[in-house]
Image 1: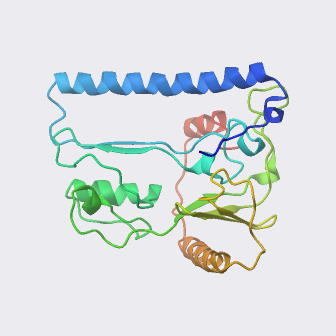
Image 2: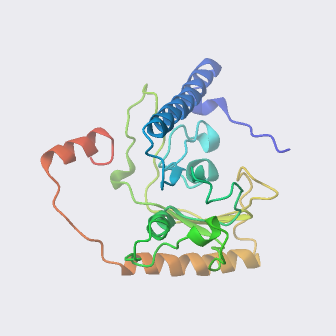
Length: 254
């Protein structure tokens, strides 16, 4: 068993602050779990579970001191981008089991569409893993999942000193390819990073620049994924003032 060690430096050297923040995070998880149970029992009591499929997934994790980060949005290490993904069928059509295949958030929409019998109208960036869920022959599994951190203008902290989350921010874009065995991170402002997740699951020893064949392969694959991303022109729409204010309050706009 590999032990995870977190420096107190991210918590301003305070063990009390560390315990307070981690306990608060665990409390939020417990609260969500209880509310989901309340929702599930409520819908069951109203006979509204028939034909439903439940998918529980998070958008990101939190650093909580790993790699010197408390929150998220700074790095693309495992604590930030590995998230829970649970699929539940109340009627038992999907047998309980663990699937080891790598998937991405972009796979959710085509998966839900296929489970609901809706024709696939997506742009091809995501792959449905519905066949894996129902035990049918599935398309070739992903070898690696893509993660992206967009550029933050000016790379400024969302909160000032003395706040609960006064994380550092780093300029430029970051991209990562990740499997169960390897993590490769490429950044526009800074060196590449390569981690052997079997020997080094918490990504402490950077192996980039050692002429490993896996780095050449991952760099080539990641470059191709980045080109594909940038070839798709984003759809633009107007946003009303109220929505802009909400986005600003959440820290997504400056």
